[in-house]
Length: 153
Image (cartoon, helix red, strand yellow):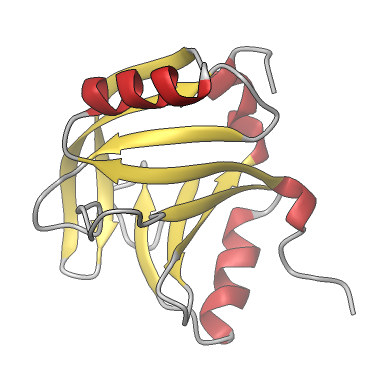
């Protein structure tokens, strides 16, 4: 059986933190990683309660191909600190986010967020579903790779 999501398309592990700069310093000190793509951006997001705009503060490690992503918590959303040592989400490149998202929903993984759109019926470049284990699965349109990493993988 062909898997819906290929493990080899896993490109980042996301951790929600209270302080991105403090977390960057800690991981750099512990592991020697350096930080590349980072920023703060207001993005439209469709949540179960309806569309809203959230301010994402994020940072990715320069080292890859598997990256660590730190995301500043956003109270009242799924991007909250759930406790020490908790991985928030696994991010996968995806060639057809809309079709894969529909299949995840069909398989019982609820759609928790569509990022980059303010219309719940619009196709989004990023979607987040929640696995039965509690972890989130983020599907990211593979066309976003150069936008996020600027030619790096």
